[in-house]
Length: 443
Image (cartoon, rainbow, N blue to C red; front, side, top):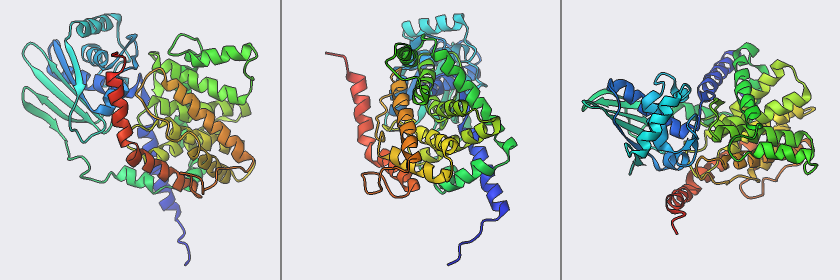
């Protein structure tokens, strides 16, 4: 049977959808997006309250609790969801979405810490919610009470109520409708994404230079050695001591993990996210920036590589749950692997990309997400290392065979298999991880 030719108009329509999705899923965020979601809900609730906030009750899904317990909230030097809710309500910018905390003042931070210390903030797990991403803030003033609910996406407000009267109600039953965006993404292929990155009009994707600018700025900040676990800074020192080679692999590793050090360590600078995560955004972009710098490519080729990486990361993530026990820096780094392979391949870049992604599917897949924390830098480091190693092997015509484990003959099927693992295979793991986190260190 003859294969139907895709018309130029059809292709342009698909490209437009990809561009719209990138613009939605590659956005700046100041701080880890899970506590930021609760901060944003609290900020919007405080705006609607119309009087000083006296108390705040937060309710979050188990996944959001896991990801918000241990991560430093930017500008506060303090970890956790309680301080995020406090400073969000007291001084957050309710119009700024994921950058709700970008303009915190010392007075706001000091008052937020006092609210936490005085027990004016409570945060607990919302029982039996079908939404893996759920953040609810209820703020109380002297005369009024406002409730704001976010579900499924970090800034997706579906319900606002003031003094028992709904102001906004866009709640729908979880799982009652198929998400057309996910259906579109699931129907893509790596071949279609490579064609998009290579052929889409440059001016339509030029905005992605901002992703490089923001995440590379975080990387430079992390290399100062003042944030998080200081992994990038200390690995850089190991080069000076002669314990590590000064080569492209180390540059990819060090500059990527340094950005995560800064982000997770509370640097008050935005990261460009991917699929709702700053660490995923870093894993998808910083390795590409490093390789592009090494090759001294022009701006257009650099942007096309970023478009390829961003879109492959989003495509791979479309097979995953919103939040889970699966560390999605792995799928984000698959995007970086695709772009690095595309930049480094002498010919047949699609074949090199497919080999690299197949090999990654047999490498660090299954790395557990145990909540957002400084240790996320180690997971970024592992993911981008796996990506670069897989690219080097792919350039030598080597890949993990489709007969091995989760790996399939087709790289697109590999990504679907990874999704099955995260969605169906790691659900009990997620429950156990949170149980351990809530009850550890009590002996």
